[in-house]
Length: 143
Image (cartoon, rainbow, N blue to C red):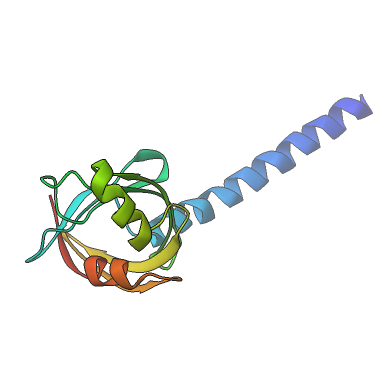
């Protein structure tokens, strides 16, 4: 009988911990800005797409040019996106030039502030990120 009582107390304790942890876990998700879908830079060609499973696509010249920079990304609570370039898609003759500007393995981060259908990307940081900074930073609208 004592063993069953102990199991009952452990079950109650575990349930209480889950109930108490639930609201804080939900609060953490509310603090993160919603990044999903496609965004286009106002007055520019740059397009970015936040996809499923932490995939970020950068299209520096929009959909037409056939240049895609694929990245893995994570979103921090404070709106900072941390990304790493995983693949470059372009015609072979341009892919070499592109890999010199933004090589596979390059890590960078930026701040993203989203409000309604508008977003601001700023503070691009990382080693050798001047090219990314000039293309990424600015005002975007949801597409």
